[in-house]
Length: 160
Image (tube, rainbow, N blue to C red; front, side, top):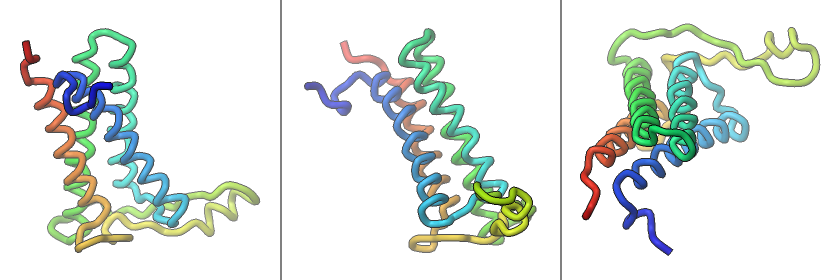
């Protein structure tokens, strides 16, 4: 059985264009629902391009032009990374950003009570970090690198 590492560059880009946003969105929802790391407004901004990228990556499996869908997915992943970089800069106080707070409603019971008692999440506060890097910072590193890798793989010539 052939490995993804020995597959043609376009197939590698396609695989990455599907796997990367799926894994990052899965991680975001896992953090939200398992660890209570509710997204702020700018966290949602980072998710939207990943949704687009995942849909485009999946469309590349069934709809022409395959390279166009893969490129769109790569751009979506890259945009999410750039938004993550901006968000990380806001969290670290490097520049001013959108610091609007948002409330997240939880399901069940009285809807008004759920909205009023939902956690307050600020865009300029780090909820979780590892080695001094916030989740937005990790999204910047992973998505920017991943988006560039997808586009680079698409630009490589197929081996004869």
